[in-house]
Length: 126
Image (cartoon, rainbow, N blue to C red; front, side):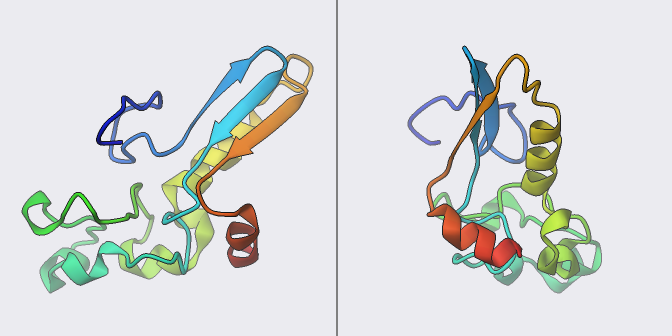
């Protein structure tokens, strides 16, 4: 992300997930590292002030975070309290909408790519 241009839509999620079609294949790139409940890295909770949490903020001010922080990269509906439900995560909503929109006649094959082993993501999402 810091060294290469990411092909996804710019925004708060920092292009950590995106999709594209190539021939008969629909490719989906997603972040299986941080944007789901009980992810292995700490969320930004420790960097948010009590006032920010009360106001529903999910990301800290830029001067209180670091490039090495590992997410979440997208928004979470319900802020800190919404972190327990995977359907509140921006990435989950992207995946659900993206997969529902795939034209299986045009692209009958779907390939997903992530950093973490998929087994871990699915065991937590269940």
